[in-house]
Amino acid sequence: LRIEIFLGLKEILSGSKLFGILTQKISELLTLLNTKTPAYSDEKENYLQQALKLINEFGNDLDQVGVKERPELIRLVVQTFNNIGNWDQRATPMNILIFLEDIADQSQKTEIKNLLIQFLQNANPAVVKALFDYWTTEYVQELIQEVFTHLQARVVSDQIFAKTIYAHANEESRLQL
Image (cartoon, rainbow, N blue to C red; front, side, top):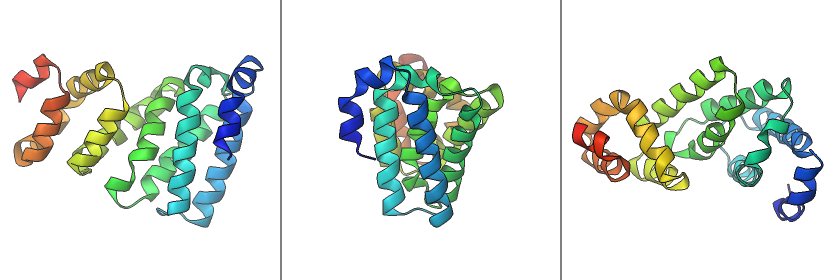
């Protein structure tokens, strides 16, 4: 993917309703990469980072992804996430899944939320901080409040993680710490 080209054509792609086709290509390349190298690879990470940039830039156009293509795209990103053994290397697919949660059906929304909770419970605090820093303060505060009960055991046992959560939490969640 030549991301610079797509970003330069953003208005044309958005106005022409072509983002759905672009996500089909993302799915095709992800299928190829998952077949070629199921686990983590620098090539796959680079591709995922480029896909994340596109999805971030065209986030308002996610509704252009066809109803039939949505579950497959999400399934492929979930598969990619699950195939990566090291939790610290799962941040990029996790960020993609957070974007895709908006177009997911209810069962996939639940799956994404569960994967996000697992990620927060297992990734290095520095990686969790980087994920939090990627998103808006409002989103992160709502997320922490929503999943806090799932994080309590780690907050108690891992001081660095507790500090990361505290730094990004709203006042209500901070009181629970």
